[in-house]
Length: 254
Image (cartoon, rainbow, N blue to C red; front, side):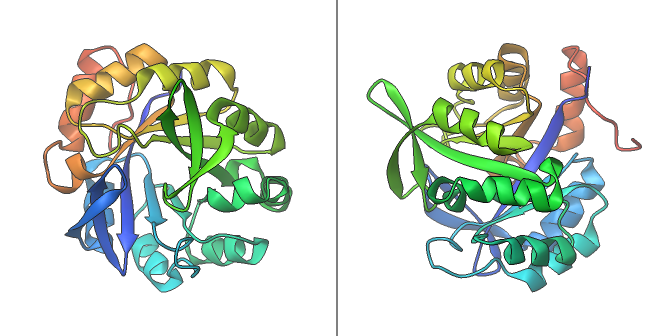
């Protein structure tokens, strides 16, 4: 069995790491370069770097900041925000990314997933999905959760997989920043339906929430931001408790 991955997420706005609740009310969480270095040392398995307003403000991810972050770490690094064409992805790869994450651009132009997979390989392509429960349906949202679409979440994820997504980063907007736990029902539904890795995002508030998401959904990875940024959970402590619960994780040396 593959070891489960723990992934801190660096949401960046104007060169600073920020964190909000339900995608709004953002507050400062520190320098992304310093945080990246710290997480790499702590034993994080990967990092995700999202320029969260790049799509909304119609500008590109800050390549220079990406280069600075990439120089500080020795773990895989996913970058997203404002990626709309092959040239954007190519620039990020050259800046130090191991993978790129696309969200709004993929929904607006699903063939973009095919293009990226063909150009770089499926392992390079992470499709991020921001979903919100509306009535009895889970609906995909765009532009940092600002715009609802007509796409149902599971249908869109299955299409993304068929087009060449190598991984799904699934964020529950209802759970995001609440620290009440991951959306395990939706995550299990999605994870059971696809054949590619699923990263759980949105709602982590305690070590038990990580234990629960792995035990109840069998997702490949769990992502969090504020509990790591503000020192509420330390990655070595988290991994030790996961091991005690017979959940396989990597050690720092690995």
